[in-house]
Length: 242
Image (tube, rainbow, N blue to C red; front, top):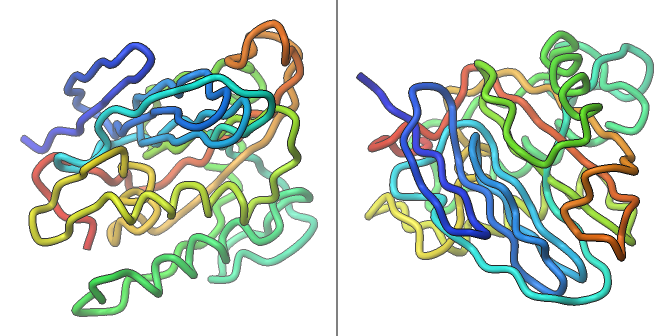
């Protein structure tokens, strides 16, 4: 049976699950530590942290660290639905306001993987139903994985206003920690592997500004939570993303 790896940092923790799971970690100045579960997460800045997506990649998406600082951001995305605004960049439903460029940023990463894919990785398309699921979960303002049937990447920030491209960029930076030949990670990379997971075809994300449950502590009570869900989920243990 295919299994997915879930890893949690701050404290460091790892476990296996039977649905899409990934890693979450936080690092950088003031990172509160990213919760990890479905997918990976990375945090930079002060404070900063990030949460990962459903489905932990094979050996990828391990543990990260967190330090103290003043402002920062945490990756955790939430699916949102809607059909007014920019296109997905790959067909499908229309991205809702505030999500413009989210799909395009994912597809840019999928088109430029290193090493190159033997066959082009299919572009993701925006799915309003998946987005509604992600948005609904994001509205709970809890920086933890939902445990739903989708792949999932999380991002949280405080003292910043990241764009969808910034959120995806924080996950894609984990490519530096992924060794394709060994299919392993030297640090958290489960968010990246979910972004480029070739079998994932549909995407939906959400974003909420929260005033409770801040992962950055009392000094930053207001924070932003992002959640992205992927269908089919990626990060299956023992499998490469493409």
